[in-house]
Image (cartoon, rainbow, N blue to C red; front, side, top):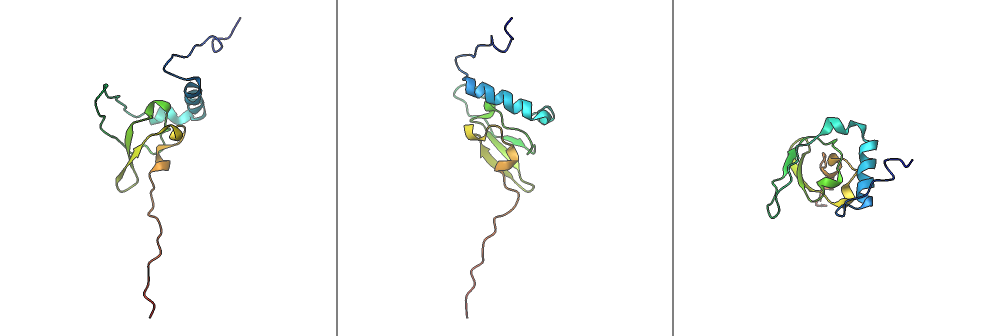
Length: 109
């Protein structure tokens, strides 16, 4: 008797790669259930407002691709546009919490 996984067929709009990656992400991140985000998909032709969140530990799923999140870095909210390369990572990885170090130019006397 075949297992239920072997008889599953993918919808035409969803590739096996995307489905497999989403399943892997959900399996490896057991704390995902504690990090649910309120995501409302826009209707066709409408522009979705950015989703403001402080959940830096939330895992990026394939259905987030194309959305804009405003991720809190401790002081302000940084805009993060989700791409396919970000799937499986955490939201906080794309919003730096520290300022970059720059050398100050000094005038030699």
